Image 1 (cartoon, helix red, strand yellow):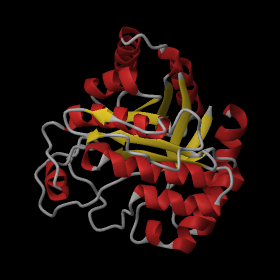
Image 2 (tube, rainbow, N blue to C red):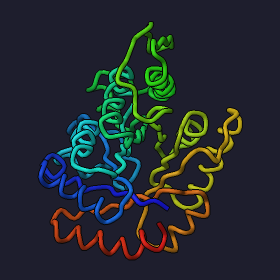
Image 3 (tube, rainbow, N blue to C red):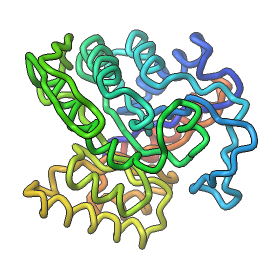
Image 4 (cartoon, helix red, strand yellow):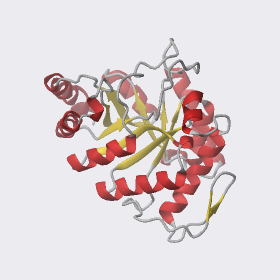
Length: 287
């Protein structure tokens, strides 16, 4: 099992270069494999969309700094040497796939192949509208954008014609350092996300599921992969949960190979103590 971290999104922590770089460097020193950051371009005040991951249906970070994830990971690439840099998740249908492919390839090239692109379709209609994209066709656009970005990463003179994206011999360099392009992990809690991961994902990052729901989604992902002629076992599974070793072993038996934990202490002494404890209880025994 590899272990990743969700850093604290509190106040200006993630936009403070000294604080976030020290956190990432301490995580690397403690033996964590990866760090994961998420995205909201905007969170409109008074939104009515329901946040699906807590009972109140509201996010708790409306007034905290949420930096652009690709820019933040590019910064962290420069202050770390081994740490895998992941988005968990980037809202793909709210971006231009051509520009997103260039941003991701740049970070991957400059980091020596350390980027992992976790993507989702988004839940906040008001955000999609503020960005200038439509909400109702976000699933179809996500599928197409995945394919378009892989063409840009792979081909010397990329050409793509889809329902939403068109380009001809559109050279895009640099290419990612990773030979197969930046791995794309499909995130989300829905059956649609599970099927998308099976059809198109290099990885699957289900979010906020109970154990029984997780097992069901995993079966949906694997069935979709098999139907698409892909090897279900080749889809890497990342999950985020607590820190109990027995629970983590239970998920490892289901096929999870990366476990992401939240350490939201912002005081350096506090998060270093937490890292040391997790290194002793999780990374050492289960890594």
